Length: 328
Ligand code: GLY
Image (cartoon, rainbow, N blue to C red):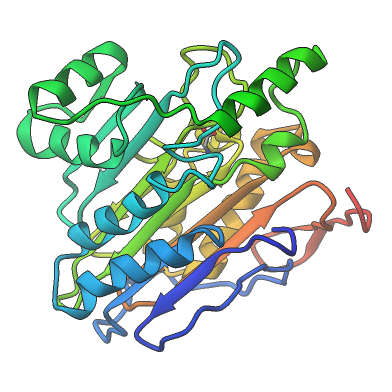
């Protein structure tokens, strides 16, 4: 991540630490489930706007609360922050000027809920939780999702702030055609949050307004269970940020969790998942993708690719396969 933005952690050890990860050789790992020892509670989230969100989640965790309540409470802070231009209120709209939202939640038991292409609702994460808890479904999208929210007493409002509308009008005036411009590296800050509570329950949430200036109706990785978020209560959880199409192609977060199941620590699991993203996306030099993982022992890890950063691929024994130039 660039110098202004990085994955952040606030946990039982207190404080926050940036976790920009440079490529490192991989050691062979024997498959095994992690031992039961736990550093909990702990909460981690993507990007520096996650600090305030982590603090809110931490309040719930420190009071002995459920990890699901913690992650919902946490990401709601970011959803309501008009300064964050890639999540909820103040999110930059699609190419037609509509703010459309994607979100999901997942619990230690494997329960999950999601909304996609949802408009005019301040807290899509809460609607995603309602889908999980009040319907037999996993995902509701578009007008149906808004109708579901209204039926369950959720108020509606415009999420297009004057600042976001100005940015959109400038983009329209610039006649730029490509939604995969530099702006989606700088602005593409999905918040994903993972929490492990004092009782060892690990839950996650993920919420975004998606890629700026995207085609109307486009849905990214964030509401897709297995892509933008995945949790297995016996192993750990992972969440993703960045160019959603690339994450979906690799089924990124499910992959991270399965790598942890095989015995890799969260850091190494994220690194290997990034390598898979690279393998599946020939345009990887132009995109930003990051994974954040937390295992049931309370260990966190993260890894990302971003234009301008060095990257080298390694095989399973840690041998360097491709030497990347110093700037991609
Ligand atoms: N990662 C968020 C998106 O691509 O929409």
